[in-house]
Length: 385
Ligand SMILES: Cc1ncc(COP(=O)(O)O)c(C=O)c1O
Image 1 (spheres, rainbow, N blue to C red):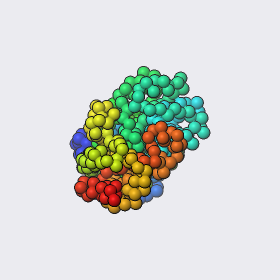
Image 2 (tube, rainbow, N blue to C red):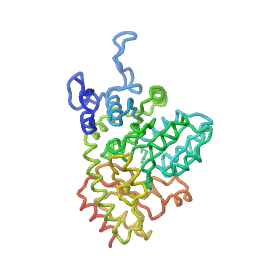
Image 3 (spheres, rainbow, N blue to C red):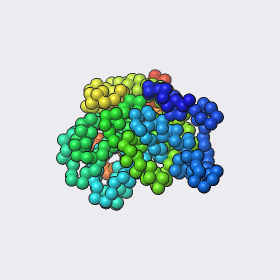
Image 4 (tube, helix red, strand yellow):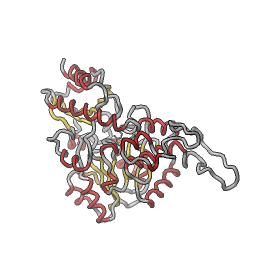
């Protein structure tokens, strides 16, 4: 019997996935169906699998698993988070307008600013954590609102239910990038959101060993359109990468809890350090979005941004950290530190970065599952010479 009817709790779904094992052999680790194509025994006879761009059993298992985790009806797996977001943006046409969080992953900014707009799709970047900004940005052509919450890298929190209410009254589609909290902490579809996107490269995979992206949704018509876009544009997740994500997801809940526990301790330590100017962590009660996040999510995650008082400290920290790795990306078991201004957010113009707070003194930390004292001592020796 498949696991489909046996579990509703998120930890159990994470461990057992959708089918949970290979129905053909009983293999407990879902097999990697490393095949590009599938044999037909006769004309018009199919096993349900014809060609791996259209569907592959390993990809299907990870797609159904993410759908269950998010409380959605359908999941679609892509080769990266950016590929997943691109597929969603292919739903829109010349003349359409999209409202977008102004503080967001630099690659998503680049997509709106340098790719999607050349197809005649307009957009307005605004601080979506202030509902009045959304109301002011709506035009008669607005077809979607795209938000990150918490945002990357300034950790702003948008009230998801408020956005859904405004959007539903006007027939506007809501899209949430749920990468930072993962379905373990936040399930936007259950709050009425239409489409959830993920960089599965981050918390879902959790081991910094593969790229992936996901789209999760409930609406059948939208699902049909996205499946068509997926097979037509072709940026699908490979069987081996699907398996790596399935394996990563098995420990999602344990990793998320430990990472959050470590992050809270690190955020408090940073806050008390006299070389640190400001700490942006949603789990600190004085964070502007603390209450809103508490209302719509079960946790705060493990992403911290902080600004140092002296710019010279940036280079010093990045070259001295040892337990924490100076590398792009986030969400994995290893703690990573990045310099958004020159890495993840380099494509955002300086005046916008300055307005948002992405300055030459801002660092972003993804807290991993190492011993928390080792993480803090590492940051201490990197900051204090
Ligand atoms: C919030 C967010 N969304 C999307 C992406 C893009 O994902 P990928 O790098 O898997 O294409 C990233 C990457 O850092 C991200 O941080």
